[in-house]
Length: 130
Image 1 (cartoon, rainbow, N blue to C red):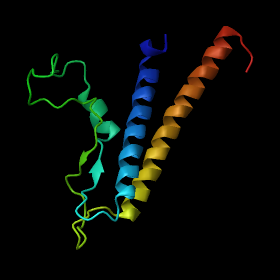
Image 2: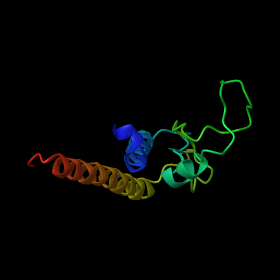
Image 3: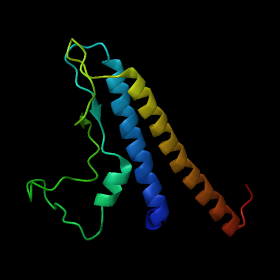
Image 4: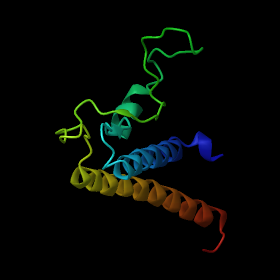
């Protein structure tokens, strides 16, 4: 039932993206002192959601049309502009990671708020008390 409501589907994807971003951020922070480590990131939700247009070209099989990126792929990838590299080759900035972590938390909070509001509306509609 909830998968048919576009807003709830979008909130679910938002929460998944926030979790993937938080995972990449925690990996970066854990490797902040690892020589040669390159900071990784996940495609922002706004870009991945824009790419998931119903009319966009999609891959139906893994080897089919290899030039098209999968917008739902949330695997961490090295950042294109990772920032300044330290003398040991590490590209993690703890300050930047903290900002990204706060942004990911806000993203997750927004998804949870949408779910909570939808749940309250359904309870009211069904006449079930809170």
